[in-house]
Length: 318
Image (cartoon, rainbow, N blue to C red):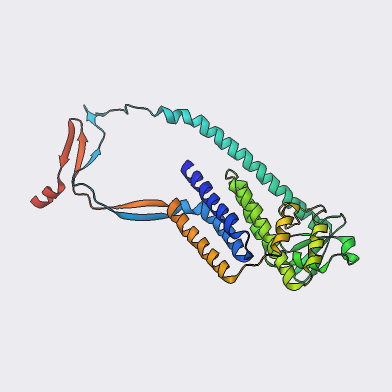
């Protein structure tokens, strides 16, 4: 188990470092979304992959032991693994700590989900362009979850919700970003011991905002006005952490990426490198098995010592 945990942490760290250094600064957001989700899954699955290696011949004389029997009574084991006995209380404490922290993360997730469900139940809901608008009486920045978009009711009724902001939130809904968030939240609840999960979550949320910004820039011409809008909205109260919401900490990167261009050739090169990284990770973190040749002979440990039996000769006699 310890080996598996170490492998998953190192593997996920490898993917994350590659993403930060090579992919994050390029304007190929859909591929980046795929890389983050695939990398997250592969970091936990790679240690389960098994690869065969070259055939390893076995000597014609192999040795194995059977319990010695004296006077018809099998001898009791001579040595007791005292290290295992002493480790049991430590393992029990670790299990308790894991269960306690997991419960806390799960309660946090339930609390955020409950807030969203309560708001959907409490406030007026109307449908528009395949989404459902939740018109709230409390001032809050626009945010979305699944196919629900949460808006401040007076702003919506007075026409103060800018069309760029609506396009941004509709992009979250149509591209189903909430499914990614639910996935990373579930992973965080049960696999919180991997410190890379926190950084994966931040990268995924930033990628969602970049995808929504791209949708706005494709539909609306005035990027300068949109930049001013997100600066204005980022100062308002945000929604629950499991929703797609404006985040001030990612604002600088979003503004910089709006001016970024990536050539098709450069994008293809980096995407090909990412696929190679996936393949290399399977080799580095997967299990290796050795194919063995047929056993020719064996030696048994009986009470009076080791006795060798050459099976090849016996077969020849028969």
